[in-house]
Image (cartoon, rainbow, N blue to C red; front, side):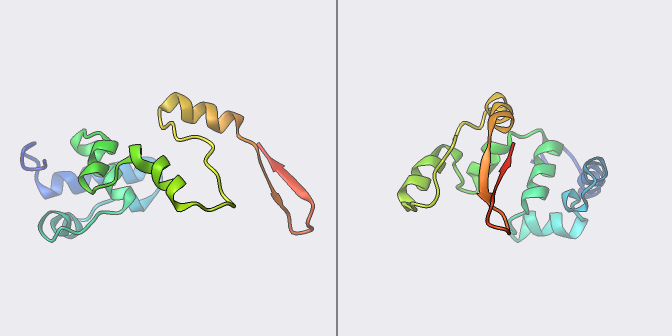
Length: 121
């Protein structure tokens, strides 16, 4: 994709530095050597670097995950196949509106250190 867009390694590295600075997290930055490793040695990028590459190349993040054989459409099936009784899915809708609604409405209870229940909203 980099070559198709006629970008140099340095262009990508500098763009990722901008994203890292904007995000306030150095993990979004991609050094020249790491980019070369990703392209030439098939090193899997971290989730942060993958995000940066998607932003720089204007790629859909979910599509890129599929390149690595991660299909979010199968997440619910895999979750149910595991069969753990102590966990349960609340939602598997990853649309932006659903995530905003979920974050606004979610309420989680868990035991606190003093064994009293604490409620988070």
